[in-house]
Structure formats: structure tokens, C-alpha cells
Image (cartoon, rainbow, N blue to C red):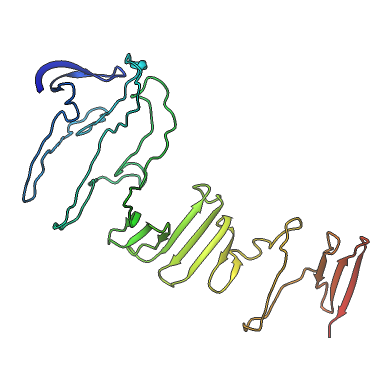
Length: 316
């Protein structure tokens, strides 16, 4: 049997935070019947809300931190004067389940979260749909630990999409699907732009990154690799090139490519390079091509005996 006991108490959390006195409804379940202390049941056939929590904050003269509803689940232990549990217990502050059965139609949402603001935020953390925090201050007496995962998408039946970001015109800007593929596209709201999928080691322009771009205006697609936006390479359907002229080298003295294969038989473009005017081979077997003046081309090689030998070809 449930006992409904109404009394005045000073509500206090396990950490000792105290609040104002409030009249509360305490539900007590007999031993063995504590699985469901209260069940609210309804069977509507049209639009309805079973439980509606509404709060209006007004006339605020000092900082306030308020919420329409709070759920706190605690597995208490010796720190707060409770005995040590002899078995594990899975706890959750809130669980939402929605069931869609055969013979029905409509959208199926496990949870709906809406943020409706007339006040502009800071484009990052002011107007937020879901804030997942891992902090012990105000909740635990002892320091907390770094927790495992903020959001896990899973389940035995699976999902077609793990994450979809829709623009205000319902076009997909970002999508992670069941194959593990990530897609992005440029926004068509407020004009055309460049859609970017970016993997970066830092948030500023100096972090190493891989960037895939799709220009919605020209249709051009590029893949960039680099350490910042000014020193990088670009791969397009037509070329593999540095973003800036003379921006990077292809290999270096101690890290060389094993071989270079080029063929003009299938392409109309020639093989071109611009030799330096002066240079010397740095190691045995290294060959240097030079264009020292308007009348000759030089080839220098460091031979096995360490001597640099030169061949000069006269130009007509």
C-alpha cells in the first residue's frame, strides 16, 4: 500500500545544500512494491499533455538559476552515511521510452527539446538545446572523475543516421549515417557558400587539418591537407597542388619518395619543372638539374666516391 503523507520539511540534498521550506507530497511504498511509487495513466484519442510543468521567471533583480523540473538520482554510499552496497545498481535521473506499434501512423520521438528565444546568444553556448555537463561542484563532496561518454547512439535495432544537422530550410548540412560515412554540404540560406568537412587539431587557423570542400556555386570539389590554411596541398579532379605558389616541397633530404611515375601518353599536358640556377647534390647518388644561364643546362651527380661530377648541355 502507498502512504500519502503531507508534511512540512526542510528540503536538503545529500551534499547539504538547503532550500526554503516547502510543503511536499511524500510517497512511501511498502517493501516489495517500491518499483513504481506513482503511476499517472491516461488514454487520450486526440492532442493532450498528461503532465505539464510551467515556470515563469520575472522581475529578476539578482542572478538566478532556475528550472521548471529537476530529476536527481543518487546511489548513496559511506561518504553520506549510508552502508556500502553489496551489488551493482544501474541508475538514471530520467528515462524516456516511446513505443510505436503496428496499425498506427505519425512521427515517433523519444524526446523533444525546443529552445525559443527572442534574445540573440553568442553563437556557441548561450542558447543551447542540450547541455551535457560533467562537474562535481554543488553535487558531490569529493572531487569527481572524468566521465566516459557524453552521448552514445546505439541499440540492438540500430539507426539509419546517428546525427543529422538540418538548415533552416530543412536542407541537410551534416550527416553521419549507418555506414559510418560523414557528409557535409554548404548552406543555401543567405546565399551560396562552401560546405566543409573539417578534421583539425586546433580550433584556430594554425592547427593541422584535413578539409573537404564542395563549392555550391561552381560545383568544384577539393580535398586539402596541411598545417594551416596558408601551407597546405589541394587535391582536385584536375590537379594535386600547393595552395600557395612555392608553398611546400615534395619530400625532403631525409624523407624521399621511392619513385615517380609520369606519362603524357594519355594526357595533352607536358611534364614541366623549373630548375634552380645553383645547387649541389647532398648525398651519394643524388642528381641535380640546373639552369645556370641562357646558354646551357647542367646535370650534377655525387658519385660513389663522394666526388660531384657535372655534365653541361649547350643550348642552341
